[in-house]
Structures are given as structure tokens and as C-alpha cells.
Image 1 (cartoon, one colour):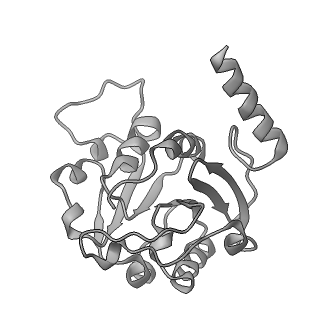
Image 2: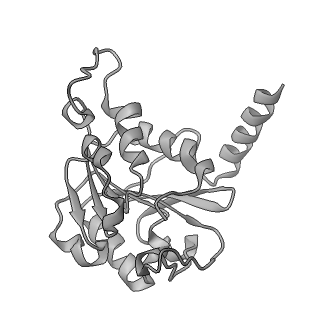
Length: 209
């Protein structure tokens, strides 16, 4: 579907604002919310008065491209967030695409076979890209619009991504958000480590006090 789990939005935005990429490929961009949020929380300089007569992509310090296989999701507003939209499936297109600082695969990788998904990930990691991947914790089938693009065909766990690069992850309700990078990174407020989880729990408790 064009959307994804809303509970993971704060976790992903926190990652994006710390990674500070100059170029991003949003694979399966759906409604385009992460394209917009990239500009809002990183690309647009809050110290500079915005120009309402220019698109976000013309005022932002981050260039965001997208891959979209479903032509029904090419709404007019997409042109305000994305520089280029490559039409087709990522497992077919990836070798023809330029390099990027960051690849977003938000509730997308489960639509690929394991071999295709790993091929895409390994290709961009070898080029120096970082990944933010979100995928359901438990496998469930999805049938929408009689479209093969909407089918879930694989289930991903940390074991599938371990050994490809530096891996950290965080469970968020029904999904898991992964950070996969060529080199180790330690980002504030994110990760599987016990200390980080305790800090998140403590912040949640303090927010309720």
C-alpha cells in the first residue's frame, strides 16, 4: 500500500536528522511523506526565510530521488519533494541508478524476494550508501488492488542483514527499523543495545510524569 506504520515515523525522522544525507533514494515512496519530512527536518534551513513560490526541492540542501513501480502513486504533489522519480521495480533498475548517501526502504523490502533484496542492499552498500530499512516484524500476506506490487513475498529479521555491514535496529510496535551502514555509527536515541533501550524507557516515563 502507499502508506506504512505511523508509529515508526518519529524513529525514522530521528535517524534522518542525524544522518544528514546530501542525496537520498526513497524506494517505493508511496504518498511521499518521507520525501517531505527529509526536507522539513534536514533539507530546509530554518534560518532562511522560505520562498512560497518555489518548490521544496529548489530550496533544500538534500536531493531526494524516488523509485516507484505503481503508476497510481504518481500524484502531482510528488514533484515538490522529489528531484527524479524512476518508474519501475528497484530490483530491475538498481544497477542503472546513481550513487546516494542514503537509501530508504520503508515497508518495501518485504515486497522483494530475499535474493533480489540482498542484491539491492549489497550493491548500494558497496558504493558507500547507508540504509534505513523498515519492515514488519511478523510476516503477513497483503493483497491490494489486484496488484503484484502489493504482495508480501519475504520476511526479514536481523539475521538476514547481519554481516553485510554495521547493523543496528529497533523494534517499533509491529515493525522493525534497521540502520545498515558500511561503517559503525552510534546515533542518539536509536538502537538495540540495553543502555539505549533503558534510556528510551526512562524518557517515556519522564514524559508521563
